[in-house]
Every structure is written in structure tokens, then in C-alpha cells.
Length: 400
Image 1 (cartoon, helix red, strand yellow):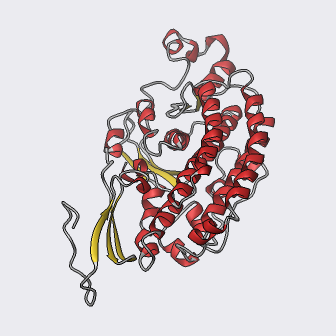
Image 2 (spheres, one colour):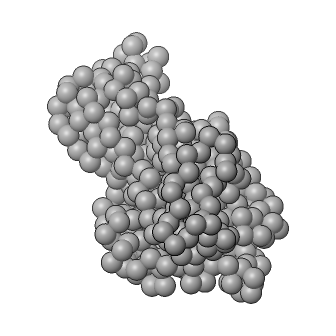
Image 3 (cartoon, rainbow, N blue to C red):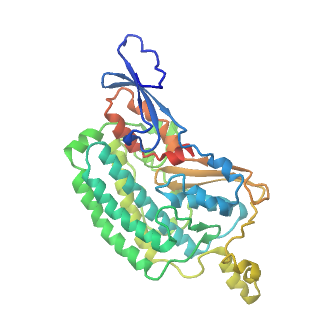
């Protein structure tokens, strides 16, 4: 018996069933997730996820911070894809206040989001394969992810928690030579994706561990409210970049990756395909990057000339960014983006003050994790690693 665990009663007819705790310190839990498992030998009879070990009250913290003050907090939700949390934070305020974003800043945001998507998928791929017994790819993906971190560091000053997005644009323009460096990375990474596939995709041991495991039907995926690769792998070609038409994705040529098998292998192939599509988006966006201002208030200052209020002494010390006392209008709005793990949304209610009246987060990992018991019950104990890894959760956004 595991210390501190209250065992459930054994199922009728199975007096030797064992109740055990997996996590929250288990290396395959991808954070502080705890699973209370009921086992009959190696067979999983029941699985109960226990959450909350990383709860920090992110929604309540938002009610006492301005949007500018809250931006450093949001990078602690999904700390492997921080740009998406920043994007949803500024998008919510922009939509409520009807602030238009200049074309250059929209392209810069899109470039940063796709780089972050690749980085997130890479750091999903390495541990996922390590969980099911393939250690070598983990070192390969770190090699490429370091290059993306170098690009982030040169543009934002930070490798992980970037704090780069702002209301109306971005914090600063791209440095000289950054676009060429990013294009070089795209050309390099395209062939590295082929290398991953040669190493992994047709490996017979890998196929045995993931093919036909954790199958979700199309109807179940929609009924559970799944999103991202979890939904698209089950035959639903739903991608918010195509559905909601945000940023400038409609101006570029790319396709939604989806499959119909609904198993762990399909979810793996979806993410590999998404990395390829992100490279295509990056190459097009970098070559079509327009000129002009990189944030909204700078655009107003340029248009109004030297007499602009944005050129006054007070705003010089704010680098002409959105004021710290930016007031959120008395309205409510739900904003969402297509994050690497699925639909990341924020429901924002303003009351004409600098602080949100309500800030509700819709994390994709929390919703996708609900289906875990259905996927693992009746499977072997070793399949839990394959299924949980294919869901791709980060407990920072699950617990918030």
C-alpha cells in the first residue's frame, strides 16, 4: 500500500486488485500530476487524475493587476510556449478596446508564435519518445530548440519567459540581421524534420507502442471538447488560425494537418506535420514582412507629427507604449488562439478600470486531460506513458 493514499475498495470479483499512486513526482507525469490507478496485475481497471499541485491562483492575480503588469505572469501558464499566453492576454484587451494592430507587428507576432509552436512540439517530442523507451531523439530536439531559443534571446532578450507582446503591437522591433538568421534556421530545420521521421516514424518498436493505443473517435473528441492535435487526429480539421482569421494567417499558404485514426500515432504525425507547416508559414511571413511601425501608439505619433500627445514628456518615459493605466472598457469578450496544445482562450470582463473585473482562462491541457481515464482503462500499465505523452500537457496551464 502506498503511504498516505486512501485505497478504494477492490472491485467485485477482483479481490487482488491493487490501488497505487503514480506521481506527482513520477518523471513521466510531465509535471506534478498524480494518477490514482486501480490495477489487476498489469491491466488498468480505473484511473483518477488528481490536479492542483501547481495551482497559483492565476485568475485571481489578474484581477489585481493591469494588463501590462500581468504579462510577466502569463508566461508561467504554459512555460514551453509562452508567446501564446502573451498573445491571448494582449488580444483580449485589444478586442475590448478596439485597438488596431499595425501590419508589421502582426507579422512579427505571427513569426514569434510559429517559432514558439515549433519549440513546444520539439520539447513534446523528446520526452514523449523517452517515456516509451527511445532516448536518442531527445538530444536531437534539444539541438534544434537551442537555435530557436537563440532567436528569441536576440529579439526579446529572454530565452524562455519573453514578455514581448504589448497592447497594440510588440515591445521592440526585430534587430538587424534577425530575419536572415531566422530564414537560415527554417531552411536547416526543414531537413531535420526529415531526419526525425527517418529515425522514429517507421521504427517497429515505436509503432508497436503507439499504433492503435489511446483511440478517440470523432464523436468522443467533439463531445469531450477536445482541441488542437487531440481533435484533429480524430478526423476534425478544426484549426483556429483558419476559423477565427486572427493575425495575418489568411494571407499565407498553409494547410491544416489532420488524420482519422485517433490514436497516439496519429497525434504524433499531426505534430510532425504541424512543424513542417510552421516552417512554411515562417518562410512566407519573413519574406513578406512589411515595413512601418511595430506598435499602435507609435503609428499614431508618426501620423500626428511633432505635436502629437504621444510625443509628450510623460510618454517618452514609457517608450510610447500603452499606458500603465490603460483602462479596460465595460464590456465582456472571449478571445482564443490556436496554441500548440489546443484552444487557449480568455474570457475577459472589464469595468472601465485598469484592472479586469473577471479573467477566466480556458487552458487546452485541462480540457484534454479529462479524457485520460477513458483512454487508459482496459489497457496495460505501460500504455499510460504513451497515452499521457500523446495528450501533451503542461501542469502550469492545467492547474493555473
